Image (cartoon, rainbow over the protein chains, first blue to last red):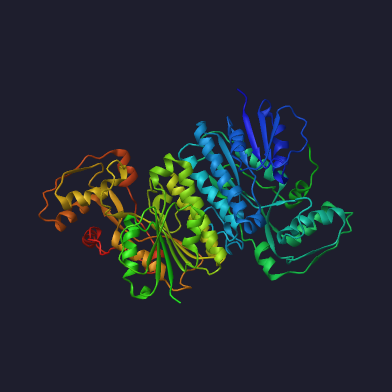
Length: 314
Length: 314
């Protein structure tokens, strides 16, 4: 019997690239794919079926979970929405995943469930000294609290073998095209494209600031790895922070100039103390659990830059 | 302006005794009290107003939060319901408290919010070596996962000063009258009344088993203490395990016989390995954060027994 794979948020920045990777993966050659999002994108593949609509809609939840043996749950109301529209935030980020989990439990097949969590469970700001697998999560944003809640449900459902779950805490994933300039946290994404396109950019953080970064390609690799880890590979604890590079912002600018040597982009720094603290004061990151399960970051800054801006294959 | 105090679960085992204590508290002499539960109990006190109904009802949530400057949230769908009726569990244990928090945020007065969490966030079974403030919560029951989720929300709302929250993880609270004998975990509560009433009881755990216990009187003291801690007393972290005594079951039986020397109760042990592991293999408990904030347990086993069965004052 062929595998049935569900991806929510399948039209998004990470989700669309994850679908590319899954469709191309040799282990999933005869799998069927259900792609869930608000709107569909064009996909030339017979194995794909789109389910469009509101992630919290009961019928949609039933359709997306029915018979699934591998689920990637990436869809969410993002930070700004979760803060400004509490009802929508709860519905999409808490109620919908809980009902998805309940539908999967009722089905009784204990599918692998890969949940996109976030380092937003730790802040901002992040703890000053270090973040590791024992760091106590203390979210300050509604979005981070929602992610933390569903981590707890993934742990509990996995403990009962209702699902075979894993929650991945994502660091900054680069480089999101057309990152919303109004978002205070978007400057790092915009930096990549500014240098690539030879545009001027002023960064609101200092060159000596540091952030945890993972290329979108490495992030997709991590999701695929999580989805295909053999049954039994995961122990009692199902939540882990993805390995990421701690990158000095000044070093990132230099690496981008190495990558785009012809670029006439001018990058300047006008540090805003608040943004510097929130988004460029990341402490050392220790990811023993993720390391032990074979998750890896890009390996080098040049490779991170190389993989952060890539043409889509799909 | 007099204080406005809301207690949910106000007709319950802990809640009704908490209401007694709050009504008698000198600091709350001119406070008004809103008691919330499915049904009201008789209260001869002009300061009391009952709000009865479903805790997840929007109008009830509005009424119970409107103008509140001190909220004790004890109401919940208990373990069995949360497992057997997932929709009711989610509605009462996740959706209702999140909407209460949202209503309190919208009101903008940053009230003290005391949330009844549970050591169910750690198991069962509990970790073998020790439980302390850094123990990673890994719930196995739906109820424990729900408690963990709301702890996260209390942390996040407090970090933003939307509430001044504190979540208390309750150990076994004794002695619940008429504890449901069908509940596997009810044997410890039934033990107290069996010895008091001179009845026979067979315990499904070994005499050398150990459990964390707190008398209901000490539990009520802890809630009052949490409610009246001065503003600013609580740091960044708002979730703590209440100090409790780690009691050897055989010692508890002896203490009960000291307390009720006339009792002809015969207590025997027929350990069930599964129940022994789940409910009588509690490791040492370290509660530094709770200790530092002035929370205390009963102090001695004899005092625990003394305070576990007390006539109601209200």
